[in-house]
Image (cartoon, rainbow, N blue to C red):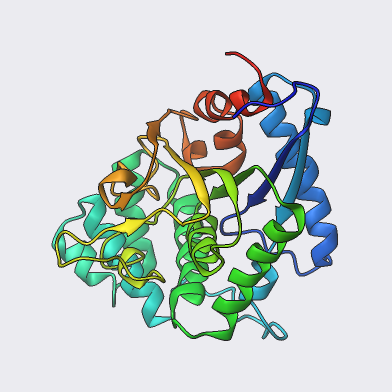
Length: 294
């Protein structure tokens, strides 16, 4: 596992939702996040940034092909039926009353956001914004198995891994779904360690049932499986992260080496990538790959 302590650890990072920046080129966005993700990861591990050789798989621009129609993304509501279905499945998994979960298909978004905000002691406005962005982008990716957008996103991540040849792949949020599918689609890609953070991979009747390849077995014992080219898979989730549900990803997937929980932030930051990157569980998982003892 460990190599020379003087050799930088090669990493490819895969982001989640909310990373689109229509004002900048994809390469400019990538460059900025390479710096910030390297810094957060190094701070958490207590090392110099030079010890990390991190590349960033950026795909947000691919989820929004073509010109933006004025006002199309400013609406307060979820318009996509798939986004509404995903939100309803999510609310039910969170334990929302059935009128709230089932009503998510027709009720204003603010009612669902209000329940979630109260349940997790969050700011209502920020919760509504997060739900809107999260389910819009997840729905775009998962809407169609044969979607050109889905294929392009998956191939962008696979190409970045093939080019950088990292020892470690770090994936956050929706990025865990994209990475899971990309690595399954390309079993020739060899990765020593896959770390999924704040992952919705196991969300029943939402993400889980839409995965490619589809989980195997007869319901309710259907299971996903670690991609063939991944030597070790570690999952990390804040116990209060409402995206990483249901808890304990290893219940739904075979081949997960460790399924860790770590309170990464006391408030709404419990799903932010920067807090997962700098948390103790991530540091403890990665430091042996630098030949360090912790």
